Image (tube, rainbow, N blue to C red; front, side):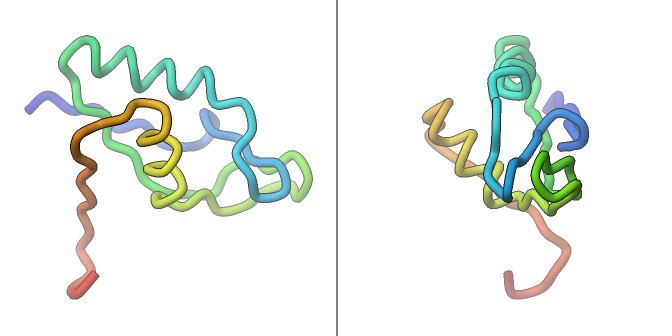
Length: 83
């Protein structure tokens, strides 16, 4: 499987903990998918226009991606037992 990591910083930006303009990062995800490449994303610290910095969770990213792309599946991988 062809895959490419897309770290959230600096692509995704929050404002008061809520995602702001998502057009550019969603465009990157769509671009990879159109080329047959699976985007690999994860939560991390990102810029927050109101707070300076905040944690953008992987769960929030998946919610945004699913709302925009309407996939048939979303896959979560973790190295933590029981989650």
